Image (cartoon, rainbow, N blue to C red):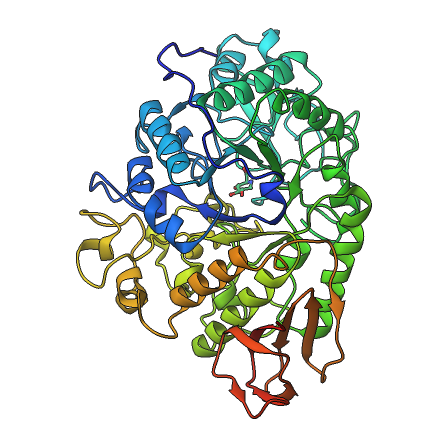
Length: 558
Ligand code: NOJ
């Protein structure tokens, strides 16, 4: 892999040194292709992100996580990386990345980049050479190449299925035109899995870490952090269920104990750098307790809480997942994390507009007004919990998923592989509206790579800025309150208060949060002064208040 000599000089991390900043940080996910387009090609880019940094500073977030912007054929929207040290021309250049990092630091925003170590693109130099050099190429050992089963090797080497549907193996054609070995890809065929048993793979990724740390990034989100190590011998699953991301047993390709050795080595690299830089794991594990293994003191800093993301708007279930999360994180002294939306799941405004039990991949609009009311309430609940919270671009505008995209515009590779469980991810990836008018509602001066619904004009940043009661102003108020109220975000526990059925109430120092997940208004004690509410709360008198259905309120008790 080439070492580019054109990388800009190292950037210092000059954000305010706040010890343990990440323990209660609010981290905003930018999906670069859908955030802001600076060159009118219909595709977002790094310069677009840079131009909108003041918006993110004013929103009140602490850090920005950018989904991949590296050189990539875009078979999986950039999660198929061809060169880990280069920016794809579609997104800009290394100089643009450098300018973005510098400007963010000037604004006291930290930058977290995405690292994709489970697989590369099939257009990565190593993989191209592994195929082109024919059987016996030493580069094949850096991936999982295996002969097929059956009389002529016509069957895949084992029974694993890809997360995107279909077999997790593809057979190559050898340079002489004959059918050859098969290679493993847990995702699309264009995403061959690395063999992490090969020392060159580890060496390469430690070097890639240093490249971006030298560029000045403040951390890494690790893609498929649970998938790098595969069970010895790649055993068949047999009659076992095929891949399910949550709630199943440890699979031979996910959450193998060997992954933790890799992260201990990475932690040593990271800790050589000043400025409290962090790792956050995208680790789908069977239980929260197994997620906690990734954030032991000598491993990673945070892991996404997908059990929380997968929980419906229901007081009993929410209380249970909150307790389980805090109980699991306390022994390893890692902050809990909370997340409701990202680029892989239906936005929470649409999930909560529908019945429970439909999963996180929906094509149904549901009751939009109900979904939005619940989404706002769910966000206030999330932002009141101890630990770090993730906000996905556009949720601060209350955006729903776009559920009626036509098949011709869809790009999610899972959609084209039939049985995959993530087939409808384009609906949460539609470019966000900045202005009421104009081409692509201010996303850029050209079009937009996925069409935006006309009703998004009134959901734009422009339409919501300064509008009393808008979702954007709700986020701004809540994030500002979180910055000035030390009891919000900090700590590792909540004190539950007695509450009517369907209602969650907890105290954290001088702060009380009450969330009504039920369909009826409830009478609750007036705990003090209202800091912020997601709906129209009526304070009856000094003793009592009426909390509407699907509404959350924050109180300060003095
Ligand atoms: C998780 C990413 O979030 C998703 O978008 C991607 O398709 C897979 N990992 C494979 O890289």
